[in-house]
Length: 252
Length: 247
Image 1: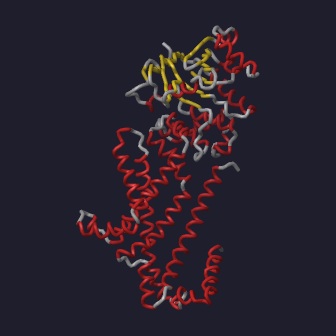
Image 2 (image 1 turned 30 degrees about the vertical axis):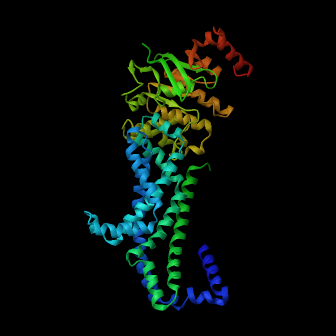
Image 3 (image 1 turned 180 degrees about the horizontal axis):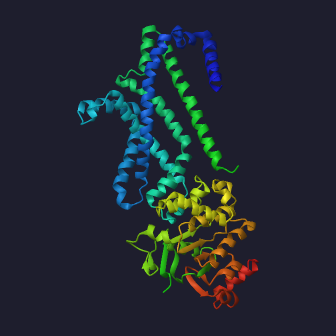
């Protein structure tokens, strides 16, 4: 329902501003071309594939980084420092730069195993590294927000540090960080478009191709629409899951 | 030899010295009540016994074995010593039953079926068997605290520490929690109870210790300590409690 409203507003703007000048630029005839859509969808499948792989790996990788950053022991200071430096570094460098650096650098450097990666796999690696740094910070803040008394209660039962994290702290922390986590995943979903920069034929490169061959910008509109169509339902879906989980635990 | 021996224990938080050489002996089947003003170190002492806080001086022994300081297995210690907290600290993302079974299954490695049977028995005992599949937030404070007691009991501890377990409860919910503690005392559970409920302490305690400025200032049987306190500080404390209508 919400989607229809968004779309109506979008169309209304296109047709009214400057007597429809925008319409011809962003909403040309190619919008109704089935071939164009087919081509874009073929590219968009790659975006989704890259997104799903990256997201799955990020969820695990970022948790590991967060847990390393929170290791309590003084002896763990060096490895903690490495994790902190990783987060700082990869949040500072623009994602598109990381993608370029890893793709072209790792190919050229002939690294063992890594040199045999396809550009798509380099892209997944780069996005995992960038978003892993963000998501690790989200996890970390979630874990730190669980009151120490929960840890004390778990430890007092005889649970080890690891068991306390696994059964008591992390499950509560993850529930608490779902909204910011969702934010990062929408960001990740959108940033899959950056991999056009290393020559992967995903949706943005195909949109540019459409634009160039038809002298229009409608390809961009169409690509944008695909991102909207997938992101908004995903958001609602996660929100519903979260509400159901909360309703289960709250007083009724 | 006492089951729990606390000897000259010092605990500092930064520059704030909360425990300044506490001595305390607790025999098996004894119920020891710790009384004293807020900040006198009652809770801190209990947390030190359970190794939730490390100590800076002195020694704690359980059944003759040192359980404080370096090189001890805190998880092994905690299998024998249960603690119930003022704020319940149930795990909000787990059902009541899971709260109770987590320790026995994960720490003692017992089969889930057996543990659940036992947990249900314990929940029956406190009249909460119908709440087994509920989440803690759906329970009243008194119910939550009773579950917290059962969670500790499910580990079959040798010693139970109760840290002001009725202080966060509405007055009308205090009795249901104290009744369970009373039953445990009758069954011979060894307990150390930090409390502001003087009437209760007088009734169930085999020994009452008055903590003041980080030491056990006076200890005696409840009849003696409440009836004929020997030291000025103790008298002053009991007088203020009486004036507040809490004794």
